[in-house]
Every structure is written in structure tokens, then in C-alpha cells.
Length: 109
Image 1 (cartoon, rainbow, N blue to C red):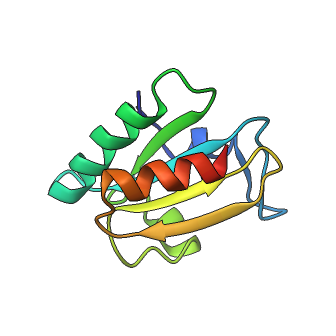
Image 2 (image 1 turned 180 degrees about the horizontal axis):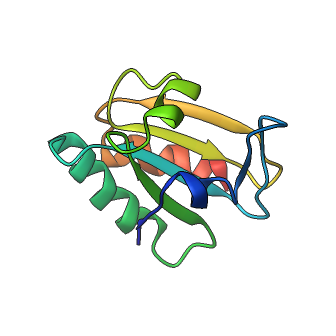
């Protein structure tokens, strides 16, 4: 299940000074907005795909986290950060299909 987090909670997985992710397992961060219908579809698909997998899935409301949107150069929604257990991140955006998301999650694992 996607858990909504704020900037302070994001600081638990991202070191703002070092500009580095600090995670011990694969993590997906979805930037969304309440008005964004594709974001809702992507969230549902991510929940379905990651169910039962050892992966963290969190979401951040882009309208409440302007500094993060700016820092990660978020230009389109939905926007997803895929972070492997080594802290290396990849960013994808747009209305990805369930099949595209499955491939991305499998690659992340």
C-alpha cells in the first residue's frame, strides 16, 4: 500500500546534504496531485504490483512539497523515483501502463 509522506519523512530516506538516498531495500516514491487522474491509476497499479513484495512504496503530494518538486525537477505527473537497495535512483514520469510498471518494478528488484 502506498503511504503518503511529507518532506520530513522523506528526509528519513534521503540525505539532503549529501544528495543521496539512504535505503536498505528497494523503494518507490510517487509524486502525485489530488487532481491528477493518471496518478490515481498509477498508484492502484503500483499497489497491485508490489503487493507481497519486499519493497517500500510511498507517495508525496507535489502540491505540498514544492521544494522536493524543485529539487528533483518534477515537470510531469505522475512522476516516480525508483531507488534500489544501494540507493541508486532512476526517475520515470507519465501515465505508465500496468505492464510498463511491472517491468520497472521487476528491474528494480
